[in-house]
Amino acid sequence: FMYYFTLVVTPMMLLCGVFFPVSQLPHALQAFAQLLPLSHAVDIARPLVNGVPPPLLWQHIAALLGYALFGFYASLVLFRRRLSQ
Image (cartoon, rainbow, N blue to C red; front, side):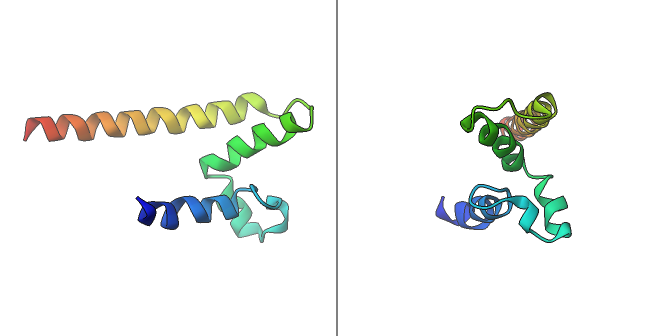
């Protein structure tokens, strides 16, 4: 479990604006960070902590929902493949 956390979650936390703003990253890393799901969650949560409604709220919610649906579909396909063996 720690292997996946070290390889996936820790770099995602460093790139997605959890500890420092994404605007301080180089442009290539900013574009890559916008593809990660944690950046959308941070873009929703950070303004809410400050008491401000998040800009582009529905866009971030749609992106998170898309990641969730893709993960559900992938798990469903892999589960069915495992059952058929």
